[in-house]
Image (cartoon, rainbow, N blue to C red; front, side, top):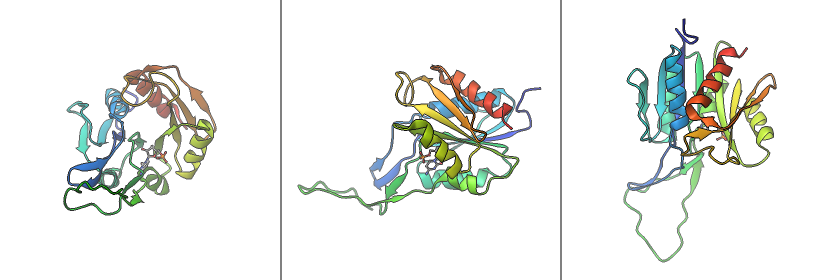
Length: 216
Ligand code: C5P
């Protein structure tokens, strides 16, 4: 029997777009490839997969229940609705940390003076799930750090009450946004750290799911 048969897996993927006015947004370079590779791998392992995905051109199998969202707030709302009964939650989305406090109703006109946009924090989906996590659930977060990578990832694991953090390296060529390959380390609550080679995102997804299946 496949390892995840009978298990419900919820995955977030992609960027979020935070509206400035009707035609502009704040976003990031995430493509959704890593999260969608995880969803496909979980499906292959027999799981019932829900994918909450920000704006992404990457398709996913019909057997994956996909909820497309745009903003961090929409992603938060969809995850909170879908998380009930999930056994494994993997939050790989690159969620915007801030959004414009006020969204202009009409397109902002160009002027010769400088323009300031006040930002407010978005809801932290991972931390919110950590706060209500059940013992039976495995909660996995991602971290993208540019300095003191392991220390920051460890403190994120504790702060957001996760079981595992997948640390993405930005320092290796071929890893991260837009690439078909990635290089990760996996840290868990028992202070284990496993560092993997640069691999295709499909193979990285296999390593991550193997670590989740073997966890506890
Ligand atoms: O704190 P930081 O943004 O670096 O944490 C990254 C992790 O938290 C990722 O797993 C990301 O999906 C998740 N996150 C979230 N909601 C946010 C910000 C980050 O779920 N608003």
